[in-house]
Image 1 (cartoon, chains in turn green, red, orange, cyan):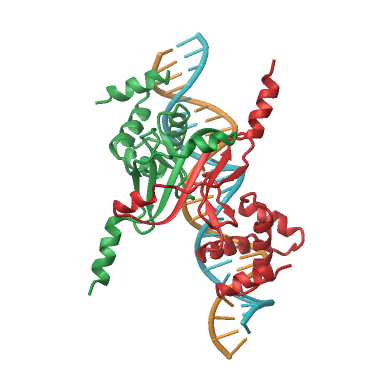
Image 2 (cartoon, rainbow over the protein chains, first blue to last red):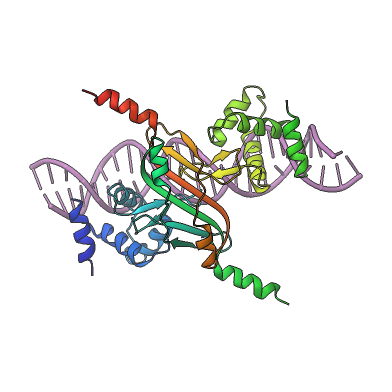
Length: 142
Length: 142
DNA sequence: GTTCCTGCAAAAGCTTTGCAGAAGA
DNA sequence: TCTTCTGCAAAGCTTTTGCAGGAAC
């Protein structure tokens, strides 16, 4: 059940705690790019003594170790992604859902040629998702 | 002096107020992608009665009209850009400065083909800028 | 005159900090 | 045993809200 995450933490010489395992498992199994609040509310159900500070501490530490990734796509809150490989995100302005977009920026070379050392690449698309477009068509349809 | 911005506001049927003109002029002449706090502190020098709420109100309205653009690059605060054309940004993890990168995403078509309606494209690179890299070399240099 | 804007104060929301006790290695 | 983690409370910041008076048109 948790072996995968125990291994992941050990590989990064991080202490293995139940809270950490819960957070990793949640992020892995719920690829919705949740906020700290969402993670906290979900995990609190099975562990009522969980503190939001612990969630904050852990997502920060996990990110520092490169295990997870944070998204600044929505401006007023950070979102977390179990995937740490390079890909883009699409956020729907109607429903707020965030989708993974498997595209890699082909211009990194150009930016590096101009003297910048790139450590992270974030691509964010904003607009209306398929489902919300369909819903709109249904409502406006003749 | 302000004719340019008066014209811009009129074109968008927005009322012309001194505060609006000041904000537009500041953003146009200081392409550093400032925060609301930075705009407020600067403009307060010549207009001590300026309110931070007014700055918030105006950057929001200007963005809604597509005159300026907001960046979510830094997570804990919004930054504003006078440029509203499509381009990318690079933020230096050392000095915090944000640079414009004139690159257009070549993959928009692919995302739209998968059924998403794209309204905004944001490309953020994070790393170390030229100046900070040089400074590092000087300090570590043999 | 009507509409929209400004600015103040208060509140809200996300995140960080300090610290004592607890748990991991 | 030593180090790190957890959880609580309080504080810090950015941003939003409500509203009365004022300015734009």
